[in-house]
Length: 604
Image (cartoon, rainbow, N blue to C red; front, top):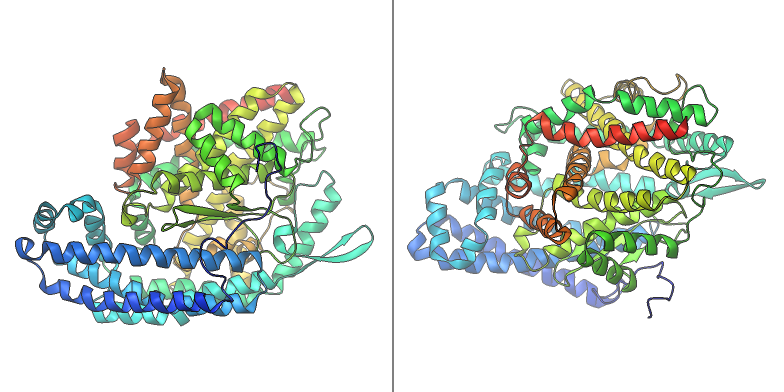
C-alpha cells in the first residue's frame, strides 16, 4: 500500500491468533490453562526458597516463565475483547470470554502467592536476591511493587477463594453491564423514519439543537430501561470491594486505587484542590459559548455543540484527512511518534468504521508477544473523533516504547497511561491551533480544546465526586436507582459550579458511563485528569528545550520510567516536578486560562 492510498477503516486480527471460532483457538486456551496450572504449583515452592545464595536461580526461572505466560494471557484477553467490541451481539464471543475469564483466577492465584511470599521477605533479602541473579535485578522494581501491593491482600487461602469467587461475582457484574449496554438500542427519528442506533452511534455534536435534544432524551429513555440492573451492578461491585477493604489495613476506599496508580494521596488531594480553586475561567468559557449559541445557559447536550461560525473548519472530516492531520502533527513533535502512527494506520491496527453492532466507546489494547496494539473506536467525521484517534495512538505509542522491556515493567499505572494519550491529543491540538488561518477557525479549535478542559476538570470531577460519595453511602446499605441519580445530580452541580441550565443536567449519567462498571479497577476517573494536566504541563516545557529532539527523548524517558518507578518519582526524575505541591498543577491550569482568555477575546 502506498502512502497516497486511503487509510484502512477496519482492523486486522487474523495474524494475531486463530479466529475464535476455530478449534485452534480452543487449543490456545487449553495450553494457557495448562501453563498457568503449572505455575500455580511452582509459585507455591517459592515460600520455602528464601535463601538468596541458594534459591535465586529458582526465582529467576519461575519469573521468566511467569512473564511469558501472562504476556500470552494478556494477548488472548485483548484478542477476544477486540471481537466482542466489534460484534457486541455475538453470543459465541461472549461465551469464549467467559471461558477465558474462568482462567483468570489461576493468574490471580499466582500473583497472590507471589505477593504474599514477597510480603514475608525483608527489603534487604529482596535486594540480595537481585544481586544474585541478573534476571531478578532487571525487574527489582516489580518485586518491590509486589511487596507494596501485598498490603491489599487477604491471608493466602482467603485471597485465593476471593479470586475464584470474583469470576461469578465481581467480574460477572462488569460483564453483565457490558452485555446490557451492548444490546441496548436507542430509537431515533431520522428523516421521518424511526431507526434504532447503538449508543456509540448517537452523537451530541449536531449543529441543530433540536437534534441534540432529541438524541439526549431518546438516549436517556433507553438507558433508563436498564437502570434497575445497573443499580444492582453498582451496588454489588462497590459492596464486594468494601467487604474486602474491611478486612485489609487500608484507610478507606481510595487507598486501593492510589496504590494501583502508585500515587500518594497528597498528590490527588492537591490536584483536586487546585482544580476546584481554578474553575472560574472555565465557567466564563461556558457562559460565552452559550451566548454564541444564542442561549442563556447551556444544557448537558449543548456542551459538545459546534459553534455557529462561518469560515471555520469543515464540519465533517473524512477519516483519511483526520489520519493525515494526526500524522503530520505528530511529525512536528517527533519523527519516531510520526513513523509509529503511520505504521499503526497502514498495518490496520485500528477499527474505526461507523456501523451498527459495535460496542460504545474506544480503547487501545496491547499484544505483548506480537509487540503490537489494536485500537477500537467509531469515527464520526468530527474533530472530536480525530482527537480520540490521537488519544488512542498515544496509548499505543506508550506500549511501543516499552515493547522490549520485561513484561512486568510494561505494566504502567492508569494515571501515567493517560498521560501518554492526552499528550498525543495536546500535540495534535497545538499544531491545529498554530495552523489556524482565520478567527473562526481558531475559535473552533479553541472550543474543542476548552471542551476537553471542561471534560477533564468538570466531567471527570463529577465522576470522582459521585463514585467517592456512593462508596461512602454504600457502607450503610444498597442504593436505589433514584438515589444514584440524586448523587449524580449533586456531583454535576458541584463539579460544574452550577454553570448549566437548571433543566439541563444529566442525572442518568451513572447508567450510561461504562467506567463505573469496570470490575478490574475502581475509580476509573481521576487518572484521566491527572494525565491531562500532567501532559499539558510537560508539553508546555517544550519551549524550554533548545533542541526539540532532546525534549522528545526526555519524554520517551518518562514513558519508560512509568513501568519501573512510582508516579511521583518518574516525573521528578525526568522533568523535576514535585506533584504533591500546587505549583505544577497551577502552571498547567495557567495554560488553560490563557486559552480561555484568547477564546473570549476572539468571541468578542
